[in-house]
Image: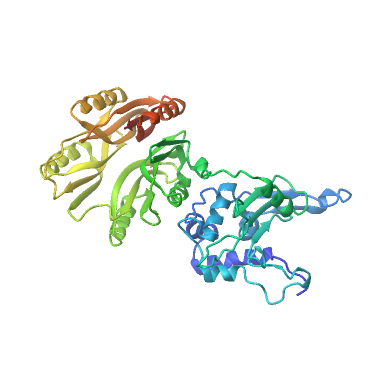
Length: 485
């Protein structure tokens, strides 16, 4: 019990055990059960690194050269992350958000004092990778194979039910992290702690929003964030990060640009927790979409949004679906279809319109010259009157502007918009429904810079973004945007 150390080899072996027991690749298992639930969208097994460092300038540099292969040391030293994800992990540990990844029993095991603690460090010990002290604080610092870093949490991770108090002094953050490039081989904990202590005016703003938003809007009690170009592989973690901030995704649309797939997202602040009430599922095939729908319906989830998009990571045409828990009333009936030819779709919705159905999603995709429509039709059996709507497929960008203006004259507003590439030219699918038409603004060809200016300007008058669709045209990226008061 005179010395204590973390075994990197032990953690590498633990990664192999996880693979054997779960039948998952180690990193895929951790992503599914730790990273995505905590909204950690950037954290991943990194690239191989070669470290050439020495503690003593008199020693030859080559004496401390080591190549770290992430494939082997992943569980110990292979992960790359950033500041936002580390602090998301902190919130997952202490439950300061709407989700706590470990039970109190597991947390107590994580920080438990070993039976043989070194005598010279009796007030602190090494728990499961974290250093722990007798006050319940935990921290972790960099080591020889990493840049300098510090993650510190005042604790306790398991709070007393009566007080729910942090050990942090009033006005101090309960947890903080500091990242550095390079190493000094000197303890950083006390220096960083003094810097944090010296700061007297910590911001009251939610700084996580800077990571999830390209632009933030606010009008009265309505708060929104807009993301213009979210990479497809970040979507699961991003959606989770938003839900943990209690931001509900109100609009999402996938698009391709320069052989990559992205999503544009509009999310709005809500009061109640969204944990496990909204599921955003990209990259679905026809078969997996049907399976998801049947499985989730048993748990009370409803299919509320559908888009057929081209995914470069999945190698072709796939589906994005949004499922919401108990979204429809008992009197609501929905029908959905995947990749119907446009002519047959037009006949189909004419038949369903006679029964009171209206399209709520109408996604367009082209297979050569053939237009394919994937859709959701909705009917309310308790409706008092039939809603008037108009739907269009395969319309040009110039005609789209005229349709928005023309339908507004008949009190029909845009409720769904999608775009598909037709031999290098954008073609749109749009649905307009008769509803209360507030003051609105629409432009079908905007750059990111122009769009941001419009959003910031119009929020003062209560006009907020409802629909944004991105598309490529002649090598440039453009956006169609609909704002409504």
